[in-house]
Length: 129
Image (cartoon, rainbow, N blue to C red; front, top):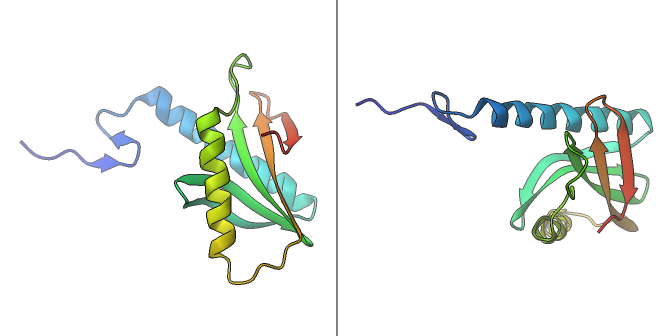
C-alpha cells in the first residue's frame, strides 16, 4: 500500500472539500483586510505568525501603534466569532510576538477583530476581547 500525499489540512485524497473551501475563503478574507489596511497607511509586519501556542492572522503598524488583527470569514452570523480558548491563544501569541521583536518601539498595542461577510463587507471591532 503506498502512502497518501498529505497536506497541512489532511490528505489530498481524503480532504473535506467544505473545509478546504472554508480555508480558501479565510485566506481571501485575510488578503482583503490586509489590502484595505495598506490603503489606509498601515504596514503589514506579519501574516499568520505562529508562536506562544497561537496564530496571529495579521500584525500591522501605523506610526507607534501595533494592532493584532483576527480575521473571521462569516457565513453564519449566529455564532460567536472567537471562543474564550481562542482569545487566550491570541493573547499568548501577541505576547510571544512582542517578545520576539528585536526593538520595542511601539507605544500602543491592541486587537482588531474583523468580520468579512459573504459579500466582502467588513465589520471592525477595536479591542473586542
